Structures are given as structure tokens and as C-alpha cells.
Image (cartoon, rainbow, N blue to C red):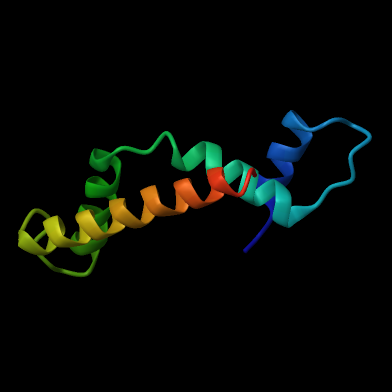
Length: 85
């Protein structure tokens, strides 16, 4: 992983005197960004990936993968929030 988003988060949201910690900043960014995503965002991302793979972008597989992806996103968001990141 590169740390472009983590550093941008650090520069914009943390005190100037605070030392940059990629891991902390990356988790804090993810917690805030993941909370914004909705099921439609995941569904469109899955559709793009399926289309690129030559599969039907709006079939049953899309529904299953969207459900799984959205569940994982919500689970990860809850874990980050519970960790106090």
C-alpha cells in the first residue's frame, strides 16, 4: 500500500506537532471514508469488475458479491470505530 491518502489525512486533520504514523492515519482515513459508502457504490464497483472480467455485470453474481462486499465494508467500519481510530 502506498501512503498517499494516509499522509493527506494526517496533513489535513492532525495537529502539526503530531508525528506522522502511516498506520494510524490510514485507519483513521478508512473509518471516515468507509462510513460514506453505500450499497449502490459497492454494487457499481462490483459491476465494473465483473464487466472487465467478461462476466454479466448485473446478474446474480453481482448481487452475491455486492452483499458480501457491503457486509465486509460495514464490518470493517464498525471494527475501526470500536477501536477508537
